[in-house]
Amino acid sequence: MNQAPYIPAKDADFDNWLQNFSTLLTAEPTDYGLVSGDAVIVAAQYSAWHAAYLLATNPATRTSATVAAKDGARVTATSTVRPYATQISRNMGVSDELKIGIGVNLPNNVPVPIPPVTSAPSLILVSATPQAHNLQYRDSLTPTAKAKPFGAVALELWRSVGVSAATDPSQCSLYAQWTKTPNIVSFDVGDVGKKATYFSRWTTRSGPGGTAQPGPWSAPLVVTVI
Image (cartoon, rainbow, N blue to C red; front, side):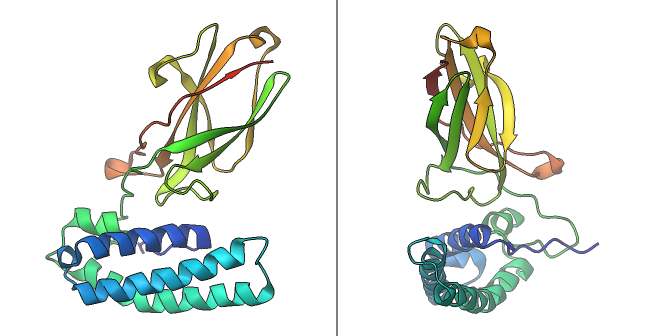
């Protein structure tokens, strides 16, 4: 059985993957069997790609020219970084844990488990209407982008509704798993006047043993139901 591609297909996921790859490699290049000069090359490719990506995804600067430049930057970044990723993957001196963390496949046919996300989401109230809350999420490390962090496939939304606000996620129950933002949370007429407390966390598709791994909890968001 072939392994799934370790380089994400979507541009937003690719941006997160390359940022993670470059950050870890820059911090400790010798841990991955490479040298600081290799890390400098990768970092330059990430900077060039990321700048082109931002121009192509910002409505104010998105044109056919900036989209074409973004596509070209991705091809260049991929062709430059892939040999380093392959070298890390095949290096027996690099632990499986480090290979998984930097986002490359292990040199076998066993699917690579995704490490848990280390950042927490942020919940934002877009609007409160009768018996409904419109919420959106962002990652705490990239608050201006809609993209989920590398490895996250969904956001778990946990909710409590009561006279008083909840103070801990254990007081809430799972309301939904969201893959897109924003979303509507609905309430019964008997909930009007009560406080809705929300906690959230990122979750991966699978981890060691095939079990999904949640990340850290967000700060609570408390909104009165109208």
